[in-house]
Image (tube, rainbow, N blue to C red; front, side, top):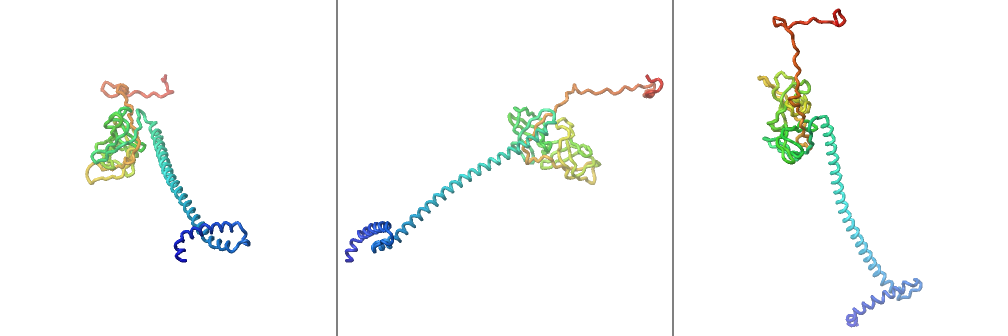
Length: 308
């Protein structure tokens, strides 16, 4: 008997798997009160199998849906992250354009009172070697920039043009040791010459020991020489040293222009007055007596006798 069952076990299993669902389906259409004993037996056998199959199918389906939703969410997150970075870059670009426009607007307002030729340029390179403090700008011969023109910023004097190319120019900054600008103390109009020291400070030279110079004094251009207009800011006094001997004093000045953050400048060429337009008023003629001394004229009062 067992040998027969063992030999035909596959067929018997197939028969059970076919008959039990058929009986279960047949029983599913009946009322529980109409169940026969084989109906109850088929339902008892098939119910756990049906529950297991249903649970497996629902679990697999839920897992597949969760995976699809997760995959879709990850793809959406990647797209949103890319869009967020793009928008942040655009916002940063718009903010930079707005700041640049504001700086240029202030520069234009600052340039309006200045006379002469003016060219607005951007700083594109800097040479910060101790021997040579040079700035390169993006305007050159094509834009009318020539050697010797003055370069200024909103904060004050930057330097002068020493070399020009087709579309660039090199500017020798105030920080260079070969720079020199005639200047005034704004408070008391004491004159001196501002020279670069090769670092971040300037020095004011040719001051007498008795000149009143104090820390915090503002220094402006005197206008002498014709390169820089009068009254442009140069810097602020940060140190005053007087030695026990000598007739001069050492004055260190911090420039008002931050050369490390310089972005826009204006190249200017102030108008020069031609020599033929310089008219000197003649000195008043003084009548002299025979002995060479000036002759005093009698004072005539208005309303007195003899008044014409």
